[in-house]
Length: 281
Length: 241
Image (cartoon, rainbow over the protein chains, first blue to last red):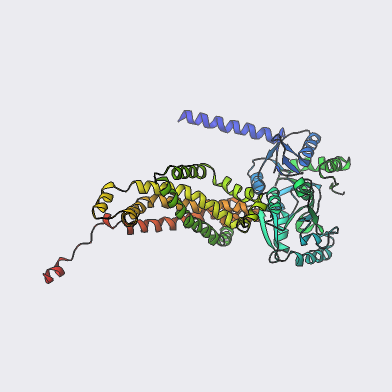
């Protein structure tokens, strides 16, 4: 009995020591998906790479903390944060009201609109609103009109989205009943199915689509449709932290503001996305 | 625990039950036929057939179902032009049929071994007795070997049915919205993984509970020789004598 007690005390003690070290901000574990190129992906050598990995390194250096990136499946990424498997999320996650009910976000470090990826030969390639940009915050009516204009073209078609994303929620709200919406675990999977011809269009973030279009097997595909931001599509991409983790949130807020101000985010954005998606302050 | 939320979740997850059962029973139906063929090939004594059956069981029992589903759906999706040429694309285009195919091939491998066990456990005396009565070939198989083998294989096959109901949850990775697919969607909307999975788990338990009862009832029905004979009503008989 005594032996068991001693052992369990030792285990609890070790756990407390480890927990304490993390609380002191020595190593902050940041989760990313690792399957969302060019935001974050697993490179040829099995290492995590991408815009957010570079950015995380920069932000952690500014905050003078040691960071460790870990890969986590997208659909469990928020529950696992709250289960304290890691301390922060940097995975192209948009700041939405729904998510804010369960976790906190830093200020945004990127803001990119959505788009449709379709084959050049498809009738969907002539989707109305291509090249136009709307915000569901400031131009709600115009944005919804643009969405309505897209509906007749999508009638009876099949759209692929990644599950648990703002795009899945967006498709559910605006295209349910018009088109057949299929949910995939990763963007790579709906890209594969688009190439296979099982679905007619992919609805995703424009940056992810740009990443896909760079692959040679997608040379006959094109991004179309109106660029929509705001509203249920969220207010930019931010670092997710547990509710009440005020210090870590503050640290990220300050580091992100500094990185936006000195042009670091613009530089990294151009490196990975070819366009500037730094938030405009 | 928020019971109101769990009740709501339960009702929403119930809408996935028809697809779950559809996937399980359609693939079990095809799989049983396939398994019987494979088991007979395995016991045929013809070398080529035996080798084929062995290889098939080795591949589909030895590799994870998840990998099989992925390969059939995403893997074959890359060979669209060839499949179109062969006229098979309309089949492989649909996630439903890909899921059915993967589940059928998988259960075919497992169940063929169960059937083989059942067939080999048929007592030699029974077969000899049947031969003594002049039965042979297909008649012997249909009247004696097959029914006895079926009865022997039933408990193990019941487990296979339950495994299949649970295996359908993997179809959610190819966009099928069965119970697990809907659960994943609910979690993404509410972020309450624990409650949603508890309810989803409970639904699978209920389904499998019903299946185990059905299998037990079938076993009882097929084993009259193991039950106590009904007590004869002596008085009535006596009158007639």
